[in-house]
Image 1 (tube, rainbow, N blue to C red):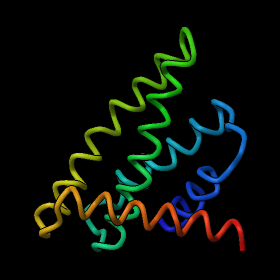
Image 2 (cartoon, one colour):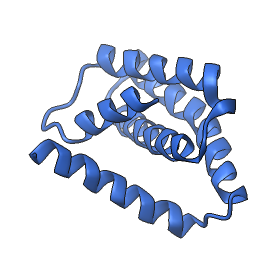
Image 3 (spheres, rainbow, N blue to C red):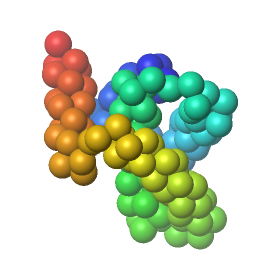
Image 4 (tube, one colour):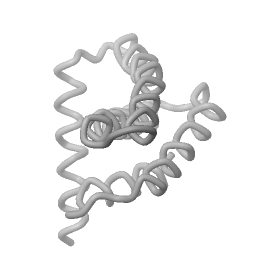
Length: 120
């Protein structure tokens, strides 16, 4: 999951958008990782996973609105599948005592980490 987290930070700090193929490849790697290992994640990995999921889901939703035809439908499907994972991980963090405010605060720190890492 760390490699996917590092990669999403790179994507979030790029000036240009990645291609549909690269987006789709990243999405597939994410789903493979989640499907194989999600049950064994420690709390830190749950945070990183949710951060990645939320960003890919948000990006897919935005791209679905901007594109037409088959690509738009594919982006919509990606976002829908990721919603289930987002609920799963948000639920796990909620069960650990975190509020939505805690999650938003932590995500802001994670965004800042990525931005400062690309400037260094």
